[in-house]
Amino acid sequence: MIDQNALPLSQFSSALRAAFKGSLCVAAVSGLLLVAACSSGGSSTEAAQETPANEIFQEATQALADDQPVKAAQLFDEVERLYPTSQWAKRAIIMSAFSSYEAGRYDESVLSARRFLDFYPSDDDAPYAQYLIAMSHYERIVDVGRDQARTRDAMQALRELVNRYPDSEYAREAQLKLDLTMDHLAGKEMEVGRWYLKNHKYIAAINRFRTVVERYQTTRHVEEALHRLVEAYLSLGVNNEAQTAAAVLGHNFPGSEWYQDSYLLLTGKDLRPAEDKESWISRTWRRLTTNSWL
Image (cartoon, rainbow, N blue to C red; front, side):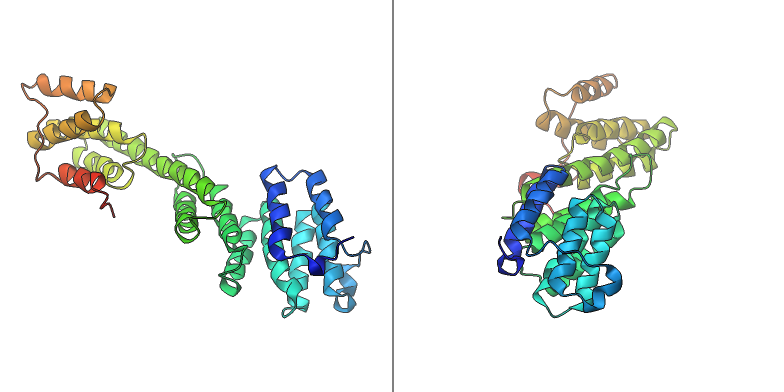
């Protein structure tokens, strides 16, 4: 049986991450115990002060395998508290973050993962710590009709993961989830913007649709946002902006049903799509297409 003391943290955590990606079935984590365990004895937390770090760690790992993530997190925290300078402390911090995530205690998971990054920013498991932070926010995203603070937190954490660890095994998944969170926020802006438009609050509606065009231009909502700008600007009599929105929509999404609707709106007023190079819409899109987007 292999001694945990001889097993690098990266290998130990990688085995857990593999189990995590498979929904952490108990059998997978139990298999990890066969590799990582150094003894089968379990000590009580009451006697922790006299218990070696490796034994507390083993008890925590067993609790995780037994589907007791709350207990596991508490025991991993105990390892760090009692033996802060030992090699087990580093392992325990990331495992505590992992266990708290599994328990649905996302705030605790974030705190542990951030502590790991503070202490070991260049460690092989640093990308995974950042991943746990991002996922702890991502799991709490609610529908677009409710407050989006969690969504913004998730987007920030996911972006940090992609930017800081672009070559990690988590970067691609993080980018996919980042795209989803951006789509989520864009959907919220569109929902509010449509309400304003319906109630003839055109300036307020334009501000919402403008946010989608400027911040979430890679989402599926941008086509509709450009069309709604055509509607709002025509309602205000600002024809050059309406024509520009339609021109940008038609140039970038020529087969879009939203462009067809915009074209009909314009022609109904004897207007045609025409780009005003000085329009904020035109300038925004030029920044996007020349890769100088901020």
